Length: 407
Image (cartoon, rainbow, N blue to C red):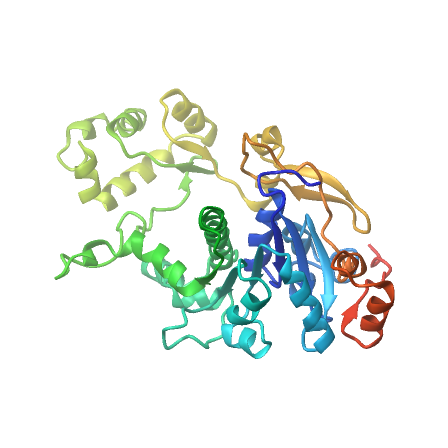
């Protein structure tokens, strides 16, 4: 038994790559039983994010699919489809992340699944809401970052559009899907009814961007332009120090005035442009420029100690490499070495959040394609002969071990 807050919740997971696997891994990390349903080709995420030691077990896949079991079914084959429907009869949640029209063509739309299980929580994660003109547009993370305004923020701030160099649209939407599933499960506990959930990436990212930057266009008629000038300022970046960089945010008078003193700018504490939060906001570019110059006069170590002494929010600036070695992350044990049965010793990232009510007690390594096909089908009531027949006719596939790649 996994234990954890979601123990007893069964999730049938048809998702792939990042958005869906992140969602279901969080559910699994907190005790849900997640059955990862893969086609004979497998989750494409098995081949993205690094080569890995064994074909089909890329590093990113390992980080998004722990605590799950894999069954390989050809859902286009009648027997494979029938096996999935039998699994759904005893499931609590079904997740998927292809375009809704594809689910309809596979006879896996909400109405189809409800016939097998009326209480199912049916959660789809896809590019665009289905009542708009983009409904059938295929989407990956960069499509949504570009269409959702994220890349445009970079252009507004730095003169050139860029994508955030991690799949933030996928990951943000996957986290939102977890919230929606949790609420739907709670609602079902109270009312006894399942429901369909749609998590469109475009609308979710547009909402994140616009709640931050709709700004003076919040009003009708507009009171000014869109865009928060603090966040779009050229100095809204890690601050250069005498010997490196610093992550710093100082907003209140209690935070800003000690900095002015240390920078030799004590007179600015009474200057009409900088003497209050409102004044500094109205003159944000000048304030950021003065602060940037002042921080260059002393070392990173000095500023970190100074900010600690004056309770000013500041932290080290990390590169990807130095983040891995951050001492605080070591203190809290975020990265843990685990033994994967085929991949050897790996660095795993434990769940960042804790619940006093208890956590999952076991750990399942990210599975090979079809690693648990036989046991999952047997649990669903299929006999060995039936399973063998499904494998023989191509409706199901068992894991075929392959030798690890040479180092």
